[in-house]
Amino acid sequence: MTLPYSSSTSGRSAMDDIRKTIQAFGCSKFAPMEDFDAGKVIIQFEFHGRMVQVEASAKGYAAAWLRENPYSSRMRLSRIDHERRALEKGQIAVWSILRDWIKGQLTAIETGILSFDAAFLGQILLPTGETVHERISTQGLLPAPEEPHQKGK
Image (cartoon, rainbow, N blue to C red; front, side, top):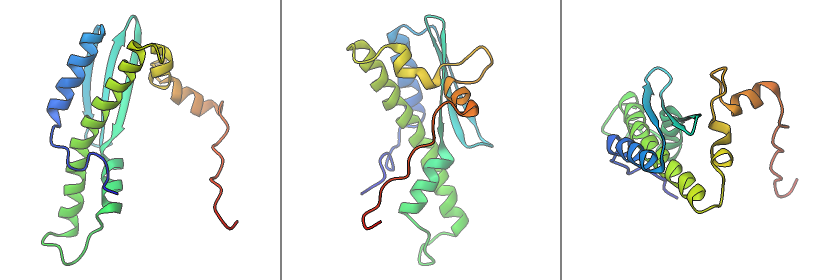
């Protein structure tokens, strides 16, 4: 199976699509940001007083791409150039992933499948500046996921 979004080329136009989508939905603020050191994209927006922060890791995507496309000495580029290419693909892909995810969440809200709070609960910013998900994680309010059962064990 090919890694989804591995052939994405939209990058910045996906960011513009996100802005247009949330503005049409009625959001009053929008702020995209790239953290180059952490290798992630951060989007903040506000809807009826609820600040939301959504993050996606270009480095995480690059690692997944490298697992699917491992380096080989037969390639015409160095290992470092191959890894740089993976990060570039990740930096483009995460914008498209966020665009599609946010559009999906907003569509679910518009069609009554989810409320705004349910759709973005983990990404809602608390007055402390942390997201609900970060608070839940640091306080250990959810049990750790169970290990998947493997055949033969």
